[in-house]
Length: 147
Image 1 (cartoon, one colour):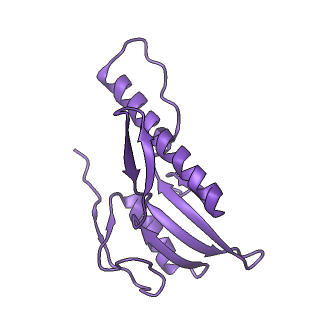
Image 2 (cartoon, rainbow, N blue to C red; image 1 turned 180 degrees about the vertical axis):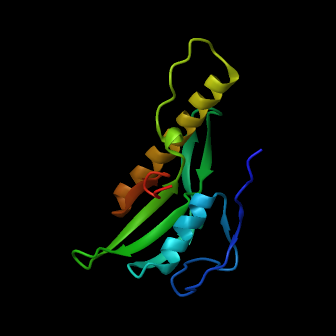
């Protein structure tokens, strides 16, 4: 059985964290790695974790739900010096891809289709908010984290 990588992150640069710096929860080693990067990177001016929500229509349960993106980040662009705002979601690469086609309808196949449909609905709602606010949406996977 895999060991779960969950816990509380101890923020180092309190002035950069927007929200409650004493209650920053990571739900995977990848989220922890991204938190450390945000906390230590000089180009990151502000960041928070699960401090905002975006309403979305859940296609599986057919109701409006709240999506709490993993991160919200303000970063200085090293090329221009301008501030850029990002909503960041950390996910396994396989969950960012449409599910493969199965020959039979199994529990696994159903779960993969439902997970992808829900994630896609969350991301589409987030992209709309980002466009309205002038932010950028980033999906970060193990590939970007170099894991």
